[in-house]
Image 1 (tube, rainbow, N blue to C red):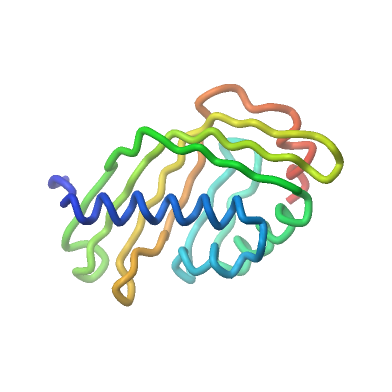
Image 2 (cartoon, rainbow, N blue to C red):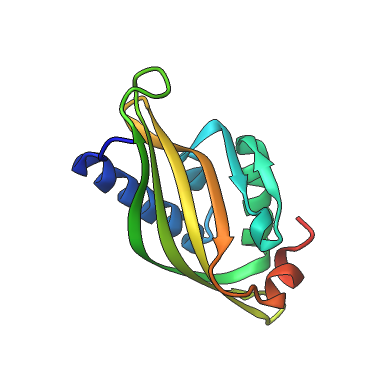
Length: 154
């Protein structure tokens, strides 16, 4: 792995920030889905939620999440390059970034969720923009029971 260029690192940090803003907005999934490749994988199995393949499955998951919640809030820190291949994916480059995340939410049923996790996003450049092709969440602290209670049936 060669060192990730600073402009790529900055682009991935911005990408992750845009993802969090899209999730926290609880508006619609289209801005969120625009951040992913068509065949993206989102693997949340390490925290007891599903692994999804493709924008359709990812969109269905987030539509249900947004329907369950009244508020979301993500605090992200400790951005770290986790992989860089300037020639990967047909020459457009493949870059990966990890970050620590505290995610909080209030559900319509009155319960609340707080998680301390690590996000890992592997991204490729498409049409001049970075798109996530693989996204995984892993726990940093034990998962609360409220996560499965609110989102477990997805």
